[in-house]
Image 1 (cartoon, helix red, strand yellow):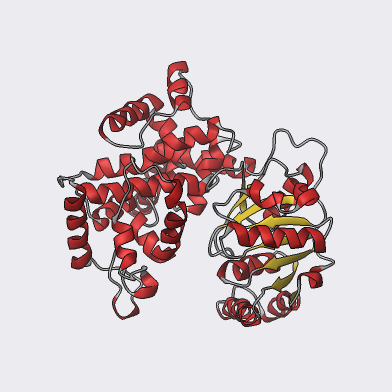
Image 2: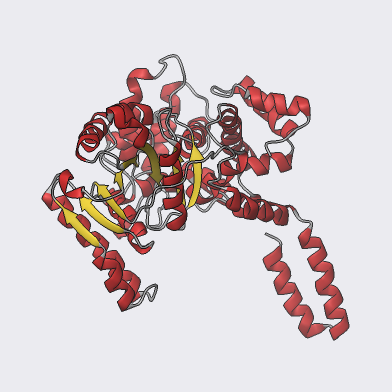
Length: 465
């Protein structure tokens, strides 16, 4: 970013130039900054944030009044959601099938609130009031009286369908939200029978009490009232709320799969995790994809890949390195090894020679001749993969607007704010430039079929916004 460095120059000028010359210098620097790409991107984000969560076709439906929320699942996600809602002024009843899990969840929430007091984020009186709105229950029937239930159970369709079937019977009239990050909202809602219109997706990002992104997912049966209620909850909880249609992974994780796919292919072709991460953090990402994977836990995505194995096209390229790492029991930071080595409890990964050797051997096994890969190719492969699939997401009406995709990546995945998000970045770069590169990648690599919508925009001289 240019502006922070210019601020330093202006302070220096205040000490070294006469007063009137200093003012002239400051004005000249301002005039350059205000027309910069960074300023345009930040203005785009400003307006995107204010547009998020708004429907162009909201009709007459109003959100239902909600003060009491039930949360099913007292694990890390359920506890995080509880903290976010408690701080927003809601009363929360936490439920888990296992009493021990419920007790750990309550303890986790109280510890987080105590840390907030220690760090002076809240005072002792606020802590007392917030904690007083939390209770635990040991049956679904004990959730009677809440206006909204958020399910944050294990990411398994059968488990979630069982829960929603029971909820529809035990709590008729209550809005039922699922925190699923990948699964089919419509399949979940079918389990609620006649109450399926009450079902909506509320995908919080982990840790839910810290991450500001919330995807509100509308299924084909979701009523306007349920949708508007979920949006209102997100706004009150100070979340950046984007609306998504129903598809595998919704907006954020659907595009993240494309981003991670290219990162994985790049290390099989000649790059290494540390080069890919360095190239993308230099571009402006908060963390690189391999550092993020280690932080999140490699076993989570591994379980998802195994669950999807039966539906995967065996004739299409598949990245093998992450699976081979997981087969060794190395799941990232929590096990001390993943794509990086974490010695003595360190949270900063070090290059692991065994991983380097594993990657080189994997390339040989796949018959891939390793080559030198530039940082520019790394950035283009990873970012343009997001953009190309983002165009498909827009064409399918999964996202309400391109700026919602930008916000999902800014607040969910650490895309640089000063670049405005992937769709704004592509428009600023020029969609013809992006399409030409996508077409070249399509000739050289798998999974790069240019989006028909991207092609159409280029032909018509338009952009995503």
